[in-house]
Length: 378
Image 1 (cartoon, rainbow, N blue to C red):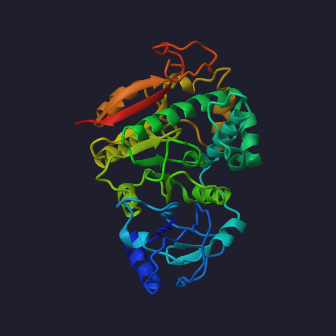
Image 2: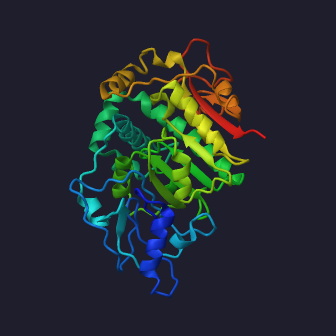
Image 3: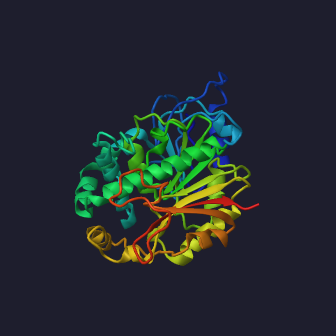
């Protein structure tokens, strides 16, 4: 595993510095070490960059890869690093894995609390004899807080989460089978697909993008888990204009096709923010790239017996749903993607688990959660 962590400096500058530190060791064997998302197997010497500030590590952008690269997407200097201790370099500081594990890492954005609820729902789904999603890490990721919030969300949410997650699982594996090798998860939360999807392999680069405290927490919980593919964590707000540049510095090859995944994200944003994100994703997408996201229609914001508890709790958490669309196909089309749209309850997204029969089109005026897939035009 090769670690690349970037704060205010670029990946290339840190790579050069690390190369200087380790040049005296000529054995050339790869290093397995970790920080934010670790499976730790390391020792050695690292040049000191100062002390960790009180309160835990804070990096504007953080990258951490968790398996060896077998292709040219990782910057060469980073791929040659070895014999480093368990260290994260953050904006000119360093912190050890032990310090991270003992620190209290909280979520500084209200929307991040929903990640705990989603994990709790996946854990509850795993208790069924016939789960749609098998996530052995979900219970630990959710913790007591996630389970408490899920109880207030209402039981029906677990079914919705399971059906949606299964659709995304199938869509991701389909893209991989068709040749996608880079997957960027926007607003990743506590998703653990790199640790559970058997369709992923060592030649797949999986990038989680979310607020840094979320990624630090997830890394602490999963530090002894082994990913099935390479994982890069990017501590970044997906609304930031320089996201593509940061991804490129972290090893994403923007000249190759990318699968962009936004699960349970857009409903918390404003319409101009969603439009801007889609425009920037299209501008950063090579031929063959795809996007998958879910979105709500306006009727889903009207309280019913199924969603009233959920919407009330979201308001209480300060994370109300704000973005809706009546035509995700038009949304994708005007941003340069060929759309394919289904919805929860469609024959392709039902799995025999929803309390209504599958249908080919949503009922007019009724709540609808869209499941949208787009392929780059041209």
